[in-house]
Image (cartoon, rainbow, N blue to C red; front, side, top):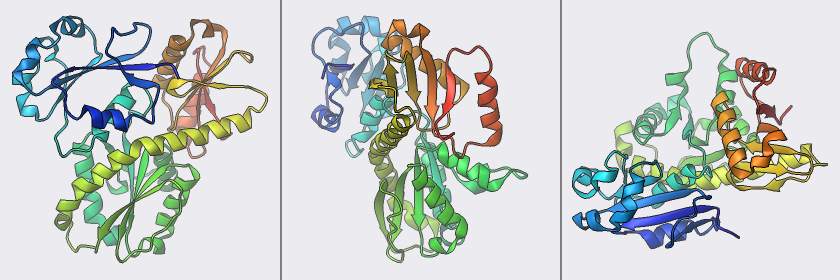
Length: 357
Protein backbone atom coordinates (compact mmCIF):
# COMPACT_ATOMS: atom_id res chain seq x y z
CA UNK A 1 0.00 0.00 0.00
CA UNK A 2 1.33 3.47 -0.85
CA UNK A 3 2.11 5.92 1.95
CA UNK A 4 -0.82 8.20 2.81
CA UNK A 5 0.48 9.73 6.05
CA UNK A 6 4.07 10.65 6.84
CA UNK A 7 5.89 10.87 10.17
CA UNK A 8 9.38 12.32 10.41
CA UNK A 9 11.14 11.90 13.76
CA UNK A 10 13.73 14.47 14.84
CA UNK A 11 15.76 15.06 17.99
CA UNK A 12 17.08 12.50 20.50
CA UNK A 13 14.72 9.61 19.86
CA UNK A 14 13.29 7.42 22.61
CA UNK A 15 10.71 4.59 22.50
CA UNK A 16 10.65 4.94 18.71
CA UNK A 17 10.71 1.17 18.02
CA UNK A 18 7.81 0.74 20.43
CA UNK A 19 5.85 3.40 18.57
CA UNK A 20 6.56 1.83 15.19
CA UNK A 21 5.36 -1.54 16.50
CA UNK A 22 2.16 0.06 17.83
CA UNK A 23 1.45 1.60 14.39
CA UNK A 24 2.20 -1.54 12.36
CA UNK A 25 -1.55 -2.23 11.94
CA UNK A 26 -1.76 1.09 10.06
CA UNK A 27 0.51 0.40 7.05
CA UNK A 28 -0.51 3.69 5.40
CA UNK A 29 1.11 5.58 8.31
CA UNK A 30 4.87 5.40 7.80
CA UNK A 31 8.05 6.94 9.14
CA UNK A 32 10.18 8.63 6.50
CA UNK A 33 13.88 9.46 6.40
CA UNK A 34 13.91 11.35 3.13
CA UNK A 35 12.36 14.71 2.29
CA UNK A 36 8.64 14.84 2.94
CA UNK A 37 6.15 14.69 0.08
CA UNK A 38 4.38 18.06 0.11
CA UNK A 39 1.23 16.50 -1.35
CA UNK A 40 0.75 14.10 1.58
CA UNK A 41 -0.10 14.85 5.25
CA UNK A 42 2.99 15.12 7.46
CA UNK A 43 3.63 15.18 11.21
CA UNK A 44 7.06 15.98 12.64
CA UNK A 45 7.83 14.46 16.05
CA UNK A 46 10.58 16.36 17.84
CA UNK A 47 11.97 14.26 20.71
CA UNK A 48 13.40 16.59 23.35
CA UNK A 49 15.48 14.98 26.07
CA UNK A 50 18.83 16.76 25.96
CA UNK A 51 20.35 20.11 25.00
CA UNK A 52 21.96 18.39 22.04
CA UNK A 53 18.57 18.75 20.36
CA UNK A 54 19.25 22.41 19.69
CA UNK A 55 21.78 21.51 17.02
CA UNK A 56 20.05 18.39 15.75
CA UNK A 57 18.90 18.83 12.13
CA UNK A 58 18.55 22.56 12.70
CA UNK A 59 17.80 23.03 9.01
CA UNK A 60 14.50 21.21 9.53
CA UNK A 61 13.43 23.40 12.44
CA UNK A 62 13.28 26.68 10.53
CA UNK A 63 10.21 25.78 8.43
CA UNK A 64 8.51 24.10 11.40
CA UNK A 65 8.10 27.30 13.38
CA UNK A 66 5.80 28.62 10.64
CA UNK A 67 3.37 25.69 10.59
CA UNK A 68 1.42 23.51 12.98
CA UNK A 69 2.74 20.13 11.85
CA UNK A 70 5.19 19.53 14.70
CA UNK A 71 4.70 17.84 18.07
CA UNK A 72 7.40 18.17 20.73
CA UNK A 73 7.65 14.92 22.73
CA UNK A 74 9.33 15.07 26.14
CA UNK A 75 9.69 12.76 29.14
CA UNK A 76 9.04 15.47 31.73
CA UNK A 77 7.21 18.73 31.05
CA UNK A 78 9.29 20.64 33.57
CA UNK A 79 12.20 20.48 31.10
CA UNK A 80 10.33 22.09 28.20
CA UNK A 81 12.11 25.43 28.47
CA UNK A 82 15.48 23.66 28.65
CA UNK A 83 15.24 20.97 25.98
CA UNK A 84 12.79 22.31 23.36
CA UNK A 85 14.41 24.56 20.72
CA UNK A 86 13.32 28.18 20.52
CA UNK A 87 11.84 27.72 17.04
CA UNK A 88 9.09 25.41 18.32
CA UNK A 89 8.65 26.47 21.96
CA UNK A 90 5.22 27.89 21.14
CA UNK A 91 3.95 24.35 20.42
CA UNK A 92 2.39 22.49 23.35
CA UNK A 93 4.46 19.38 24.13
CA UNK A 94 3.22 15.85 24.77
CA UNK A 95 4.65 14.30 27.93
CA UNK A 96 5.62 10.64 27.44
CA UNK A 97 7.07 9.20 30.61
CA UNK A 98 8.82 5.84 30.62
CA UNK A 99 5.85 4.29 32.44
CA UNK A 100 3.20 5.81 30.14
CA UNK A 101 1.52 3.50 27.60
CA UNK A 102 2.82 4.12 24.08
CA UNK A 103 -0.83 4.44 23.01
CA UNK A 104 -0.74 7.96 24.44
CA UNK A 105 1.48 9.04 21.53
CA UNK A 106 0.01 6.57 19.04
CA UNK A 107 -3.51 7.89 19.61
CA UNK A 108 -2.37 11.50 19.22
CA UNK A 109 -0.92 10.57 15.82
CA UNK A 110 -4.13 8.80 14.79
CA UNK A 111 -6.22 11.81 15.88
CA UNK A 112 -3.92 14.18 14.03
CA UNK A 113 -4.39 12.26 10.79
CA UNK A 114 -8.15 11.87 11.28
CA UNK A 115 -7.94 8.13 12.00
CA UNK A 116 -9.32 8.55 15.51
CA UNK A 117 -11.97 10.96 16.73
CA UNK A 118 -10.92 14.10 18.54
CA UNK A 119 -13.89 14.44 20.88
CA UNK A 120 -12.55 12.02 23.57
CA UNK A 121 -16.06 11.76 25.05
CA UNK A 122 -16.50 8.91 27.54
CA UNK A 123 -19.88 7.84 28.96
CA UNK A 124 -19.73 6.54 32.56
CA UNK A 125 -22.46 3.96 33.28
CA UNK A 126 -22.82 2.97 36.95
CA UNK A 127 -25.24 1.99 39.72
CA UNK A 128 -25.34 5.05 41.94
CA UNK A 129 -25.91 3.19 45.23
CA UNK A 130 -22.96 0.86 44.55
CA UNK A 131 -20.12 3.05 43.36
CA UNK A 132 -20.96 6.73 42.96
CA UNK A 133 -17.63 7.61 44.58
CA UNK A 134 -15.65 5.66 41.99
CA UNK A 135 -17.70 7.19 39.16
CA UNK A 136 -16.98 10.72 40.43
CA UNK A 137 -13.26 9.95 40.81
CA UNK A 138 -13.17 8.69 37.22
CA UNK A 139 -14.97 11.83 36.06
CA UNK A 140 -12.43 14.09 37.78
CA UNK A 141 -9.33 12.16 36.68
CA UNK A 142 -10.51 11.68 33.09
CA UNK A 143 -11.15 15.44 32.88
CA UNK A 144 -7.56 16.08 34.00
CA UNK A 145 -6.36 13.79 31.17
CA UNK A 146 -8.25 15.87 28.56
CA UNK A 147 -11.13 13.44 28.16
CA UNK A 148 -14.73 14.68 28.10
CA UNK A 149 -16.48 12.35 30.57
CA UNK A 150 -20.26 12.20 30.82
CA UNK A 151 -21.75 11.54 34.26
CA UNK A 152 -25.50 11.97 34.62
CA UNK A 153 -25.35 13.59 38.07
CA UNK A 154 -22.96 16.29 36.77
CA UNK A 155 -24.20 17.04 33.27
CA UNK A 156 -27.98 16.64 32.82
CA UNK A 157 -29.97 19.75 33.65
CA UNK A 158 -33.43 19.66 35.26
CA UNK A 159 -36.44 19.76 32.96
CA UNK A 160 -35.06 17.65 30.08
CA UNK A 161 -36.11 14.23 28.82
CA UNK A 162 -33.69 12.15 30.87
CA UNK A 163 -33.65 9.00 28.71
CA UNK A 164 -33.52 10.88 25.41
CA UNK A 165 -30.56 12.85 26.72
CA UNK A 166 -28.74 9.73 27.97
CA UNK A 167 -29.15 7.85 24.69
CA UNK A 168 -28.00 10.87 22.70
CA UNK A 169 -24.88 11.19 24.86
CA UNK A 170 -24.14 7.49 24.33
CA UNK A 171 -24.48 7.97 20.56
CA UNK A 172 -22.04 10.85 20.77
CA UNK A 173 -19.47 9.03 22.94
CA UNK A 174 -16.27 7.33 21.90
CA UNK A 175 -16.45 4.73 24.66
CA UNK A 176 -18.67 3.65 27.54
CA UNK A 177 -17.11 2.84 30.91
CA UNK A 178 -19.35 0.13 32.33
CA UNK A 179 -18.77 -0.12 36.11
CA UNK A 180 -20.07 -3.65 36.61
CA UNK A 181 -20.89 -3.56 40.31
CA UNK A 182 -22.85 -6.25 42.14
CA UNK A 183 -26.26 -4.53 41.80
CA UNK A 184 -25.80 -3.08 38.29
CA UNK A 185 -28.01 -5.69 36.61
CA UNK A 186 -30.81 -5.01 39.09
CA UNK A 187 -31.26 -1.54 37.61
CA UNK A 188 -33.56 -1.28 34.61
CA UNK A 189 -31.89 1.98 33.54
CA UNK A 190 -28.34 0.63 33.80
CA UNK A 191 -29.24 -2.43 31.72
CA UNK A 192 -30.84 -0.16 29.13
CA UNK A 193 -27.63 1.88 28.87
CA UNK A 194 -25.63 -1.30 28.29
CA UNK A 195 -28.08 -2.56 25.66
CA UNK A 196 -28.09 0.82 23.89
CA UNK A 197 -24.27 0.94 23.79
CA UNK A 198 -24.21 -2.51 22.20
CA UNK A 199 -26.90 -1.53 19.69
CA UNK A 200 -24.89 1.55 18.72
CA UNK A 201 -21.64 -0.46 18.56
CA UNK A 202 -20.01 1.87 21.09
CA UNK A 203 -16.83 0.37 22.52
CA UNK A 204 -17.26 -0.75 26.13
CA UNK A 205 -14.58 -0.81 28.82
CA UNK A 206 -15.98 -3.06 31.53
CA UNK A 207 -14.69 -2.55 35.08
CA UNK A 208 -15.24 -5.95 36.67
CA UNK A 209 -15.28 -6.66 40.42
CA UNK A 210 -14.93 -10.07 42.07
CA UNK A 211 -18.53 -9.76 43.26
CA UNK A 212 -19.82 -9.11 39.72
CA UNK A 213 -20.79 -11.37 36.85
CA UNK A 214 -18.96 -10.80 33.57
CA UNK A 215 -21.59 -9.67 31.07
CA UNK A 216 -20.54 -10.18 27.44
CA UNK A 217 -23.24 -7.83 26.23
CA UNK A 218 -21.07 -6.45 23.47
CA UNK A 219 -18.36 -7.85 21.20
CA UNK A 220 -16.64 -4.52 21.76
CA UNK A 221 -16.15 -5.12 25.49
CA UNK A 222 -12.68 -4.76 27.01
CA UNK A 223 -12.41 -6.03 30.61
CA UNK A 224 -10.40 -4.42 33.42
CA UNK A 225 -10.27 -6.51 36.61
CA UNK A 226 -10.58 -4.45 39.81
CA UNK A 227 -10.67 -7.13 42.52
CA UNK A 228 -13.00 -6.59 45.47
CA UNK A 229 -15.29 -3.57 45.77
CA UNK A 230 -14.03 -0.87 48.14
CA UNK A 231 -16.04 1.03 50.72
CA UNK A 232 -14.49 4.44 50.00
CA UNK A 233 -13.60 6.06 46.68
CA UNK A 234 -10.08 7.02 47.88
CA UNK A 235 -9.30 3.30 48.16
CA UNK A 236 -9.25 3.18 44.34
CA UNK A 237 -6.31 5.61 44.10
CA UNK A 238 -3.88 2.95 42.88
CA UNK A 239 -6.29 1.69 40.21
CA UNK A 240 -7.55 4.91 38.60
CA UNK A 241 -4.39 5.47 36.53
CA UNK A 242 -4.48 1.81 35.40
CA UNK A 243 -8.11 2.20 34.28
CA UNK A 244 -7.28 5.34 32.28
CA UNK A 245 -4.26 3.61 30.68
CA UNK A 246 -6.54 0.74 29.59
CA UNK A 247 -9.04 3.23 28.13
CA UNK A 248 -6.21 4.81 26.12
CA UNK A 249 -5.08 1.38 24.86
CA UNK A 250 -8.59 0.40 23.75
CA UNK A 251 -9.69 3.64 22.07
CA UNK A 252 -8.27 3.01 18.61
CA UNK A 253 -9.65 -0.54 18.46
CA UNK A 254 -13.12 0.58 19.53
CA UNK A 255 -13.06 3.42 16.98
CA UNK A 256 -12.06 1.10 14.13
CA UNK A 257 -14.69 -1.54 14.96
CA UNK A 258 -17.44 1.08 15.12
CA UNK A 259 -16.36 2.59 11.81
CA UNK A 260 -16.44 -0.84 10.15
CA UNK A 261 -19.99 -1.27 11.42
CA UNK A 262 -20.92 2.08 9.84
CA UNK A 263 -19.35 1.04 6.51
CA UNK A 264 -21.45 -2.13 6.59
CA UNK A 265 -24.63 -0.11 7.16
CA UNK A 266 -23.64 2.27 4.36
CA UNK A 267 -23.19 -0.58 1.89
CA UNK A 268 -26.49 -2.15 2.91
CA UNK A 269 -28.35 1.12 2.32
CA UNK A 270 -26.60 1.96 -0.98
CA UNK A 271 -26.32 -1.51 -2.50
CA UNK A 272 -26.22 -0.17 -6.06
CA UNK A 273 -23.30 2.19 -5.38
CA UNK A 274 -19.72 0.92 -5.53
CA UNK A 275 -17.82 2.98 -2.95
CA UNK A 276 -14.03 3.06 -2.65
CA UNK A 277 -12.85 3.15 0.97
CA UNK A 278 -10.29 5.93 1.31
CA UNK A 279 -8.33 7.30 4.25
CA UNK A 280 -9.86 9.61 6.88
CA UNK A 281 -13.20 7.78 6.93
CA UNK A 282 -14.00 8.82 3.37
CA UNK A 283 -16.05 6.77 0.90
CA UNK A 284 -15.99 7.88 -2.74
CA UNK A 285 -17.87 6.66 -5.80
CA UNK A 286 -16.73 8.29 -9.04
CA UNK A 287 -19.39 6.41 -10.98
CA UNK A 288 -22.24 7.69 -8.77
CA UNK A 289 -20.46 11.05 -8.24
CA UNK A 290 -20.89 10.75 -4.49
CA UNK A 291 -18.57 11.29 -1.52
CA UNK A 292 -19.42 10.32 2.05
CA UNK A 293 -17.51 11.24 5.20
CA UNK A 294 -18.22 8.75 8.01
CA UNK A 295 -18.62 9.87 11.61
CA UNK A 296 -18.89 7.54 14.60
CA UNK A 297 -20.61 10.23 16.66
CA UNK A 298 -23.34 12.85 16.20
CA UNK A 299 -21.84 15.49 13.85
CA UNK A 300 -21.99 19.26 14.19
CA UNK A 301 -22.00 22.02 11.57
CA UNK A 302 -18.22 22.30 12.04
CA UNK A 303 -17.92 18.70 10.83
CA UNK A 304 -19.54 19.68 7.52
CA UNK A 305 -16.72 22.15 6.92
CA UNK A 306 -14.06 19.65 7.97
CA UNK A 307 -15.56 16.96 5.73
CA UNK A 308 -15.51 19.26 2.70
CA UNK A 309 -11.85 20.11 3.31
CA UNK A 310 -10.92 16.41 3.53
CA UNK A 311 -12.88 15.63 0.36
CA UNK A 312 -11.11 18.34 -1.67
CA UNK A 313 -7.73 17.20 -0.34
CA UNK A 314 -8.55 13.75 -1.67
CA UNK A 315 -9.67 14.86 -5.12
CA UNK A 316 -10.22 18.38 -6.48
CA UNK A 317 -12.63 16.93 -9.06
CA UNK A 318 -15.04 16.12 -6.27
CA UNK A 319 -16.61 19.61 -6.50
CA UNK A 320 -19.63 18.46 -8.53
CA UNK A 321 -20.25 15.33 -6.43
CA UNK A 322 -23.05 14.84 -3.95
CA UNK A 323 -21.28 15.31 -0.60
CA UNK A 324 -22.54 14.12 2.76
CA UNK A 325 -21.58 13.44 6.36
CA UNK A 326 -22.91 10.01 7.30
CA UNK A 327 -23.71 9.01 10.89
CA UNK A 328 -26.00 6.66 12.82
CA UNK A 329 -28.45 8.97 14.53
CA UNK A 330 -31.08 6.57 15.86
CA UNK A 331 -30.96 8.23 19.29
CA UNK A 332 -29.99 11.74 18.25
CA UNK A 333 -31.85 14.36 20.29
CA UNK A 334 -34.91 15.80 18.55
CA UNK A 335 -33.68 19.40 18.68
CA UNK A 336 -30.34 18.48 17.09
CA UNK A 337 -32.05 16.40 14.38
CA UNK A 338 -34.22 19.42 13.62
CA UNK A 339 -31.10 21.59 13.35
CA UNK A 340 -29.54 19.10 10.91
CA UNK A 341 -32.67 19.13 8.73
CA UNK A 342 -32.72 22.93 8.76
CA UNK A 343 -29.09 23.09 7.63
CA UNK A 344 -29.77 20.54 4.88
CA UNK A 345 -32.40 22.90 3.45
CA UNK A 346 -29.83 25.69 3.09
CA UNK A 347 -27.11 25.99 0.46
CA UNK A 348 -24.37 24.26 2.48
CA UNK A 349 -22.27 22.15 0.04
CA UNK A 350 -22.17 19.13 2.37
CA UNK A 351 -25.35 17.59 3.79
CA UNK A 352 -26.08 15.53 6.90
CA UNK A 353 -27.16 11.93 6.19
CA UNK A 354 -28.56 9.99 9.15
CA UNK A 355 -28.17 6.41 7.96
CA UNK A 356 -30.60 5.11 10.59
CA UNK A 357 -33.52 6.76 8.74
